[in-house]
Image: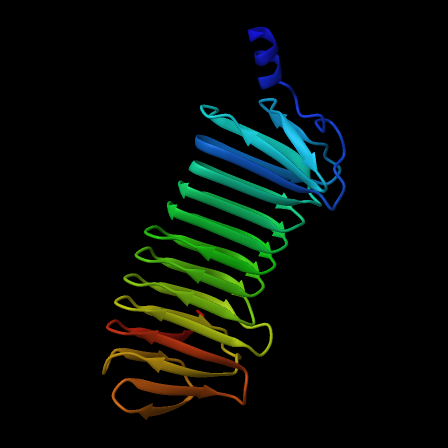
Length: 267
């Protein structure tokens, strides 16, 4: 009986070494202590290291990582969707042409080279997302949240960690934090709304020199600064300054309750 149980626990996934259809959604769940790496490549067949059992229900391939398993690598065809959930550990996902979801309780998330929508969560850890084409929805708590080289609408939230949006092209951006900075070096890809809010930190936005926009800077008196030529500015009350360049374009609301707001051209 013991031998049968051991054999069952170590059974290989029946889909290992096989093609996965593009409609497949790979779901990996781990309790803790794991580094889960998912690597997509065109024409790749499913390979799990170590070998793990799995179940296929409809188009969903589920892999449950036994507690105590430290490192898991899944090589998969790129044209699938991926979801990884870990209670404690790190997640690395790359090379996927489909939607991606990563959720970790305590640990870091790195996602790169994805053509699809990305959802990422970490209660205690950093989020680094790069080379993404698709919508981004990411939330961190007390650590850095960084989005680099992305094209698509962005929604990010943080509590006390710095939020960095670098080389982001988006029609719509929503970024919020409580006690830290939001730094955005971004370019619009069509009319939309950029809204960035912090309570005690700063909001710093840099846009291309030819970008047309209407921006409202909301900050304490003398805490707003605009460093760009050829714009019109109008003060509204003690806190608000409206900045206009061109006609129409992106509408921005940049707000800090007790910190500074800074708007400038990209260098």
